[in-house]
Amino acid sequence: MNAYCPQILVKTHKIIESELIDEAFIPNFSYFKIVENEFDEESLKEIKNAISAIFLIENTDFVQIKDKFEIIASLINEEKP
Image 1 (tube, helix red, strand yellow):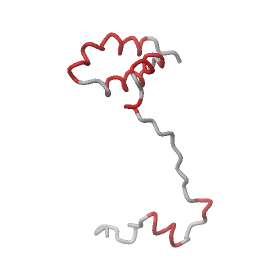
Image 2 (cartoon, one colour):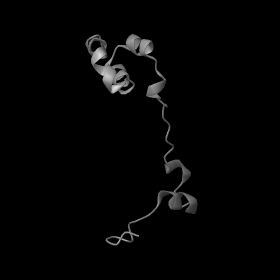
Image 3 (cartoon, one colour):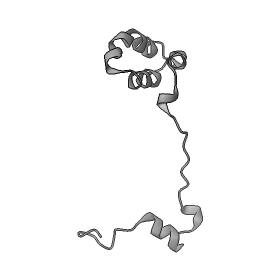
Image 4 (cartoon, helix red, strand yellow):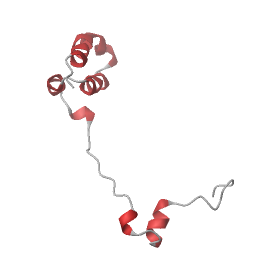
């Protein structure tokens, strides 16, 4: 319990289980799964945007990043709106 405001601390699942809220008002979260380590370097080069540059950085060994600076810069520079 929250020592400061015990009456405010409510678990979401408890509200849903108790049926205090109509189902129409219960959030239904949907999302696209993006697994950045499943993109190969060639695919990232084709995408040509800042996100593909970030994915490339995150999937490159620290020692090899300096060898890919030109590729990373070109991905960002070639980004189209």
